[in-house]
Image 1 (cartoon, rainbow, N blue to C red):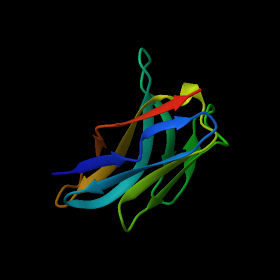
Image 2 (image 1 turned 60 degrees about the horizontal axis):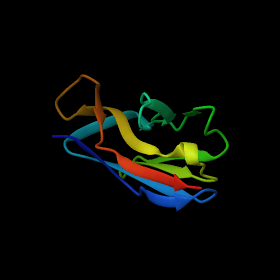
Image 3 (image 1 turned 120 degrees about the horizontal axis):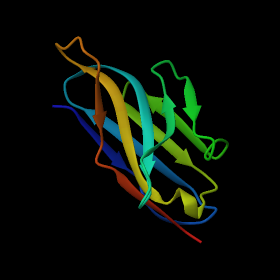
Image 4 (image 1 turned 120 degrees about the vertical axis):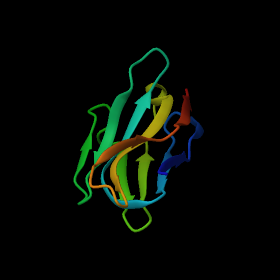
Length: 121
């Protein structure tokens, strides 16, 4: 069974920083793109950043220049460094990944449970 477990959320003042981590575990043979999404109350879930297995990145315009996504392929972990946080960054942040399980040729998409990030002004 595959699990994605996020950590690092919490309460921070505006202008501060947080680093989220998401660890993948289970019978995984390979991980392709890993992503961070977020969902604020009353809003749809939105893509924040994504990183390919080779390290190519893509960011939402609202976080470009403030957030940095990275990954450690050996540890099967993806990170989101969030700097210069604003009130509008308050949301539940979800990890998402396309991966293959051992013995399965299909690429499947998985979600973590989410971690709350609250930015106070």
